Image 1: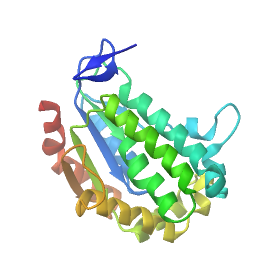
Image 2 (image 1 turned 90 degrees about the vertical axis):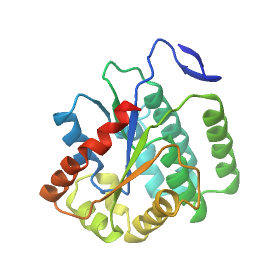
Image 3 (image 1 turned 30 degrees about the vertical axis):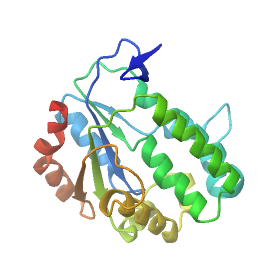
Length: 228
């Protein structure tokens, strides 16, 4: 059930808990970051609901979008928007939560990239934008900190080759470069869209051991969001 929170809809019966969003390109190391903090801190970790995106009543909109983005982009992104909103509103018993990406990057990065690359018709983009604007104007979606795992597209591309996700085999370097630029414009240059929270940048081109060390080094800064 939903109730009113500061004039916006919010999940009923759930005390306001701090939220940290881990943002970054595909294969930037978000899963590793989430696993590190889930094992070493009293937090709830919420990953992107990729399994849902792969199976909507027997259909795989994620694979369809990569195969034909102009036809299936709005199908996938409408569902992404819904499932990310559901995660933002989900109840938790932990002191605070850490999310993989957010409803904001779904719109500001991935919908934007489809539209700017000419792979999403303007009418589809307009409809998704209207939905997003209504949601963010009428629903309470608090975020206390964004952790940006800043990676080069080339490193992400190399990591993708080593992963076993079927849908990602068709992702070219150019796509990762476009996603990278949108992230940089949003979180570093801050020239594209509003920021829902302060941003902590962690360089993430390093190997696993170096990244684990960086997460430990930044632990206090990240967990300080729990005191907001």
